[in-house]
Image (cartoon, rainbow, N blue to C red; front, side, top):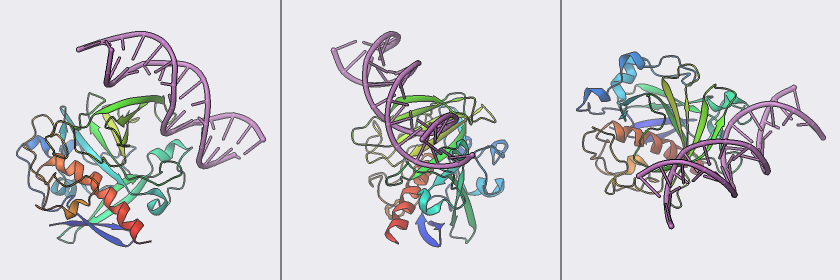
Length: 257
DNA sequence: CGGCTTTGACCAGCGC
DNA sequence: GCGCTGGTCAAAGCCG
């Protein structure tokens, strides 16, 4: 049931979406009113109906994720996203990431362009979450290392770094400039460790989530589709899988050069 | 006391 | 080359 990512003609499988089992809790489903609401962040997204068919987004600390946007490495994929860095628009510039599920339906995700400024680009994935809290508990432990007022938004942007030793994953959190009810979280990089306190699982499930049963023994850096056991079991796994998909697509494209 | 947040300063990339 | 902007650093303070 693996879906596949279509990236510059490459096809990389992932378990990101297709035939995803319905969550036990309805709150995991895409809130109809929150789908693809033309926010500044999401520039291209599947129709609401399609999303509701394929994505089950996590409820995090009472918040409901609304949009995901995955970003493969910018230099390879950023078609038209040449304004990386400098410009505030680059931050939310989308790189289209499409994948084809088992039914042959083409799905499109959108990712932010840009890279880490120079060196090896890292996978980036973000999502917009309707939340009253700024910091969403994703099971990992983050240390805040910066806060910056950005020109593109009246709301400050917070910078977090995974506090795990040797893990260079970063995330940026900011309120949606158009709708402060939404929190835009961007993950930069992929964890090379399991989520703390998750008993070896990839991620601790969000509050109230059903028991995590996805094949989390697989190192996070591994391609998600290579993990035994098939699709993730819940929305939280979906979140993880998306992050992994970005990484995997990254690796895939690199290896094809 | 250790870990975390805050916050101003600094640095690098990009556009003009 | 200069200015703007985003991202990071690091010292100081706070909190459990």
